[in-house]
Image (cartoon, rainbow, N blue to C red):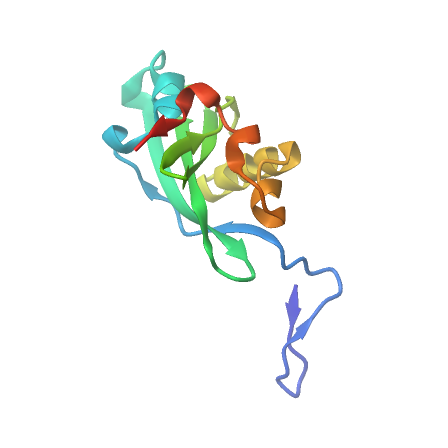
Length: 145
């Protein structure tokens, strides 16, 4: 957390973690731009009740582009799923989405939950420590551009 004492100098708490990924405010994503993993995840749902959102992801603290977070929210079932997507070495990689309850969550909270699930799996470690994303991505969905 940032704190600002009376002398207006900004201080960082020792608890601040300046690593990881942040994302832009989510915007609506057209179905035709959805990765096939997300398209497959929503294919069995009532598409009139599914909203798609996307956000650009950036690395902290450098603000270097780090891919995309794409989310599907089924408003009728109150469930959501999401993917991390990246274009790397001329290929389009994406994780597999898993549906979870998003009851009483707004869009920002859904994105936070998707990020937390992916982070827990170690999906972003490849980016932060070097390497390549293949280990965490769905091989079947990696297509050449």
